Length: 339
Image (cartoon, rainbow, N blue to C red):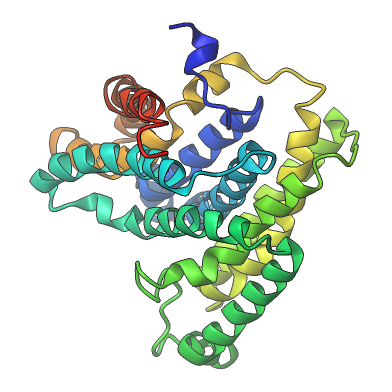
């Protein structure tokens, strides 16, 4: 089978590169950098400040929200002009997520299931995949649906996340959670739904011609990364919960991803990043187990930290070849099974 045939119809040039960077940010947000602790113990103020900045460089939650937006875009972009056979659609999507996840579950059993830390986002994705054919069947107005879902998320945050609002205004740790997924793995999807729909709205605007220069896209990337760092700082030091900040940050991510898509219509992405992006889902679900394994076999030094990141990326690609990619192929071979 040729490479082009193995590529999913949802694959869009440039998207894989973004996926890899986002998965890497999630990985780096979970891997403890020993250099940070070493610099924090220094008596020099500059080194202490450097350590503080390094400790908040990678906002994993923001990367997940960007994943939601990209997911909504890819699903709608590949399906909006087609008739959806919902059984076939769900079978393929569920198989792609669940088959690798089952393997991860067995791998994680030896390490007390560290993969549970990212399970909430996968449940959200499965819910969005389930809802999408329903939304299509009723021919929803996506802008109106986004508005309604965003208002609903605000209402739920005010009612059930009130403790984090109080913590923000009183600047207290009392009852402060901070997490985006504090409504649990089976209810957080409601909060994340407007972010996913933002991706659909990008696809709806696909026919609008936008010219994005290299200078403009670099500026967007710097702005997005800087804001994500600031939000990390505010979460850890000013009691601004991810629950309160991420859905607002999603608007910035929406604009950035829209510009990335437009940019890659005229520019070729870096081949290596595109290739590694194939394994972004594998890296996302495998990295907690990789980290638990590396902590057992390696001492916590900066050299080992860098080596561990490399090993995790390598193992993720191997996992993609052995597990995730066959799951993709299997889903294609059964594409008409339930039609």
